[in-house]
Length: 136
Picture 1: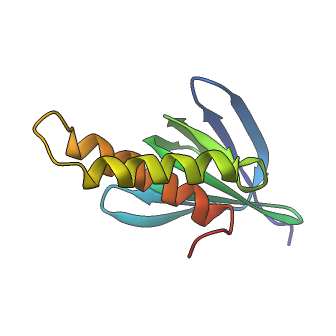
Picture 2: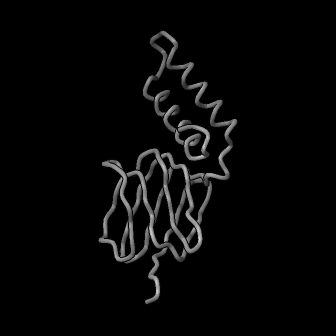
């Protein structure tokens, strides 16, 4: 029996990428991680900061995403993401610098600090480092 596949499209403000033959996709949903397989039921969900993993013939692709939305409909998956970086394309030095800046902001005392923004920046930076294999 031949293996079945579905189509995935990833769109961010900086890039577009498509995969014709995906056999699975796992993503960081707002209510927890979930996996898409062939003939999945239609749905739409918000995504959080985390790991996006796509399996295509012969390889497992890993991406760091900072959130967005996913739509699944008739064996087509559309990911509208704020950002999406392949594990091997992550600028580790930039991610480490971003994490250091966010940590420094969170240590500052004062009323002009946007704590939620700093926490969000730290979460994105640590996710990128984790996906790049530099932080566990």
